Image (tube, rainbow, N blue to C red; front, side, top):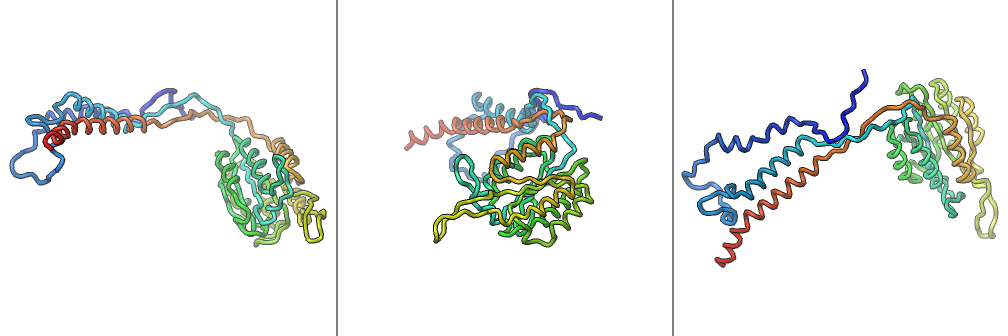
Length: 340
């Protein structure tokens, strides 16, 4: 049965609470006044500032109206007012997509150019992969970060904005300085096998070779293939880089440690593809290709955005109560000033 969407406009979730509106008036009408016999149990030093001879402060029309308005706005806030917006459609697919990003020490190599400035590899990955994540509306996207160890930074979620933010907040060396590619694949297999999505995809990005971890990359790849997990691998890093040393400037290959053979084998065994990103532009093109290889499905889900509004009547009630207290205290303050 299709879920019924709430109507557009202002609505009260617990509108029945408004039935309590006459409660103060009924209490005042039916309950007798408290007995004044005997001594008072509590002395209030500033009582004279809010009391008047022969009449209670509630007998003042202005204060009575203010107290009534406070009660009305408090009930209105308790009834949970909400503004229900227009219907929005969200694309929904049957795909679970995990990104495994290398944050080992080698990702700090500054062999990339971004906005005409030399930056490290992770800075480029954050920008390009972050934009890719935000384009995946309709997919459940998760994030695995790995160095010497692999850990799940973001579980599978439709909240691509939060996943992108958590990728941007990742730091080099947070998971150790070495590279555990096998553990990253193993963790992805473990997380994805628990879900019943029709398609499960892992995009693994690294700039080195497996130097740590408990599981070898090809061994983890066999587990992934048996689970029907498709792995796309991306090798990142420039082929040439000018460095300064004691003997002057010289050209080096900063990607000499990149194990392209293993990355190609991982992709081929699972039906994926290996990509080589030598600069920021190449990495951006790779993620555009991944968008084409794994397109977002066109199925849509209708939702209405809901904004909670209780804080507005609650704030008004607070301000009215504060104003009523000040007004009630003014006569007593004036009497105290005159007496002084």
